[in-house]
Amino acid sequence: AALAEEFTADVEAARAELDEGPVPVVAVVGRPNVGKSTLVNRILGRRQAVVEDVPGVTRDRVAYDAQWAGRRFTLVDTGGWEPDAKGRAAAIATQAEIAMRTADVILLVVDAIVGATDTDEAAARVLQRGGKPVLLIANKIDDQRLEPEAAGLWSLGLGEPFPISALHGRGSGDLLDEILKLLPEMPEDREPKAGGPRRVALVGRPNVGKSSLLNQLSKDDRAVVDSVAGTTVDPVDTLVDIDGETFHLVDTAGLRRRVAQASGTEYYASLRTQSAIEAAEVAVVLLDSSEPISEQDQRVLTQVVEAGRALVIVFNKWDLVDEDRRYYLDREIDRELKRITWAPRINISALTGRAVQKLAREIRTALDGWEQRVSTGELNQWLAALIAAHPHPIRGGKAPRILFATQVDIRPPRFILFTSGRLDPQYVRYVERRLREDFGFIGSPISITVKARE
Ligand code: GDP
Ligand code: GDP
Image (cartoon, rainbow, N blue to C red):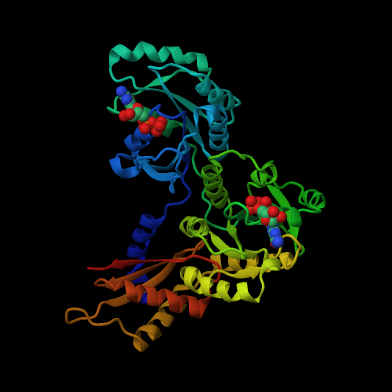
């Protein structure tokens, strides 16, 4: 207890530093070549942020951490995919729709020198439907003489055009001030909400069986909707009953409508996946057991881990797995899922309905792990025993010591270790492995921050 007191100030400082909380999202929308990437780079303040695009190629990252005047926000570039000329109006409408759904503030970027094109108008029409604040950016106003060009964009019906030069930075500070004014205050989302169905994202690369599973689960979902009167469920979401418990599946509209059948689907699918994961407490990642675990599968898993959500891995299409396939699959799992052996796994068939009801138990397990808390007293006792049995190796004549540890957060669990001197990353991994062995945290990513005390 004396030790805990001694560390109170350090814990508070570390907690403040770590405490990110939910941040608002700003989406950048616009047709190709208007200067979206240039603007994103300008806002991020670093050149390398957005890699040069190969036309038509999907970028991995779509969301970036940005900051202005001490306020953090996520910047989402919805224009990472370049449609051919023919598909442009449709593609931009999709972009705008996704932005409306996922962002708190939307920036529609237009090339003011070219003026409003049909494609710009298509985007504007979607954004006019309202719901979200939109800033109309008149880009490429490189000097004052060009300012009158911006006025032509009033015709888009989105209010006053905001003149900037993304390339030279002209007006970008004012723009950021304006963005900050529009950002909503974020509610604290740390502690479990009382009652209400748990929020689940059904994700995975195309064709793994997400919509089939959704159909299987929601065969009889009207009764469910009625039974949870008073809960606010987005029209794009679905309430389902699994094994007697109601779950809230987020952003299922895309799975039902099979939105974008055109090229570029993959890019928008990854945007949607990101937003579904963020809206959920637990992500159910589907894999196709009849096929090798792919890069794309790994990307989805990484998205979940990086977002700090609970995770359940579902091997779907189990009806297609014979003994032969089983043999290779086991090896693939050992090789490809080594970093997430902590996630519960379940074999199902969305087609036949095999084991889908068992999903409920795995989801509950993962959520329990995500919300698990170890008291400071218990943690330090455990750590003392661990260190005694397995001390840190000696480096340069002395061994760094762990002085005190505490769990600062749940959803997901986060730990801080205060030490004298730097710990080997290998030793930190050892501590994490033992934490999991002895306390569980099944189905949840956990993070360990090491603070060396002078
Ligand atoms: P994106 O396709 O919308 O992401 O557009 P980019 O950011 O790739 O920009 C397209 C082209 O417009 C590039 O050659 C940029 O250098 C240029 N550009 C972007 N912003 C400005 C600007 O403010 N002024 C001028 N003159 N050119 C710009
Ligand atoms: P999504 O793109 O992830 O939504 O995948 P779908 O639900 O559209 O499924 C893609 C294809 O896989 C469809 O032809 C489904 O019938 C098939 N499929 C889905 N689940 C299963 C399953 O459990 N077993 C088998 N054999 N096929 C499945």
